[in-house]
Image (cartoon, rainbow, N blue to C red; front, side, top):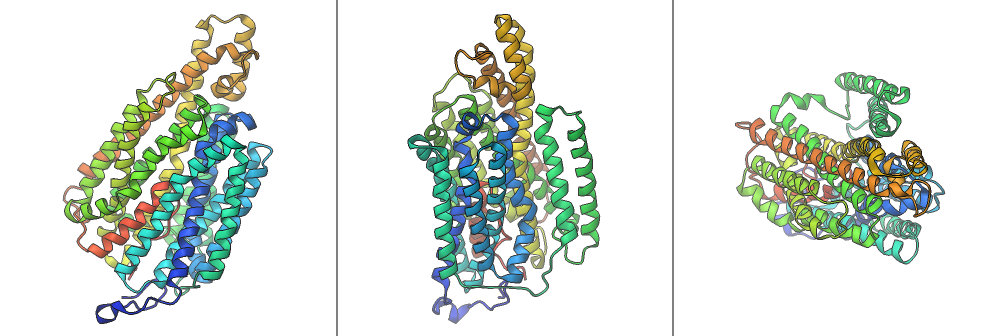
Length: 553
């Protein structure tokens, strides 16, 4: 068997030979790198409430903190994979870790939310380099599929641990000091990881046949950023304002140009020919819609507990343990299920569980600050996500010829991450638009005096109901707090419903769209399933991942 770097793996009688030199050091460096990247990814989730209070942000500004990270990952993850093959995976990871250290420093010192966006984008660029670089570095030092599966399982475990630990880290430091302290801790972790990688990891390359697709990268990045800009700013600026309309129009033109460029590119970053396969097309659409539902629900939860209810950051972190934990804890269970149950039905079951969890979230009372109501829906969504995140790539890989497995997995990973990026953008647009309309409609009947009503209307026009909801007692407009709270509760309940609908649509597509199609059955190769499951579980914390560790040829 040939690995992605062209080296031969050991099989049969040689499989018990000593491990490849540098295996332990490379594995340690890779695990540390993805842990740091995931901490950077998930850290703002428990801090949204404090960021809103300290930096005086409104709704869309908070959305951009999360969106800036994910957009950077989605836009450039294919290119980072090529750069690692051309110039070395260890160099790529070291450079990415340095970017995370720089981005976290910018975030820790940020005097305004706009500067915090820059820090989040730098962190996203760094993480986008660390994910594919660290994972591919592991494949280069493992001898066979079984060893690779064990290594990737450990890698994914550290990634999932980063997703679970990050909100707790942010909550603890915010409680004893300032939210800025958590970013300084991240700087320290990044520097340690960078040194470990430089000293212990083995360098590897695979430049044969690899080249940059600069036109494709530029058109894709510009188009995606412009379209998402319009979606984020539309609820507050107005959907018919010139900047929003231009963003959608120009962005759509760039994305159309991207399709044309990729059709004629000798080495495309996004192989559109894969979509001639119906099973692959369905699984790709499901990856986007289903992951939108998952991260949309996660983002809505962080907003509900933070800027809406102003709960303690430690309490904000607790539901995320239930949302994120199952994807790691159930890795061996899902791996076995993939042998015995058709991946299509695992996908359907998982998305149904996610839809039910989102529906339960939508029924919550915004005035109830207890955490009991979060337990059942968080667990349902977490378990559903654990079933779907591995299965979606299993379907994609089984639906194409084996020599296209690497490209198919990379494409599915990118589309899944696109769903992760769209989640916060879509739910924020739905929630904030609905909350703004409900607030303005209910304000006149709230029984406030003229001065309070006028002040609340003016503040809401500038910053939305979230700004009114955060006014200190006695401030002009503060008596409209109850109206703002109810409007926000209504808006985010609608956002949860949108996530439920998205999950239900994904369930229907898998149940009816793949009937009789190749690639919808159970996975037969035990070692391949283990590697695929471990790798896909790594994506449970809404990050960018590298192509599947299975060899492409």
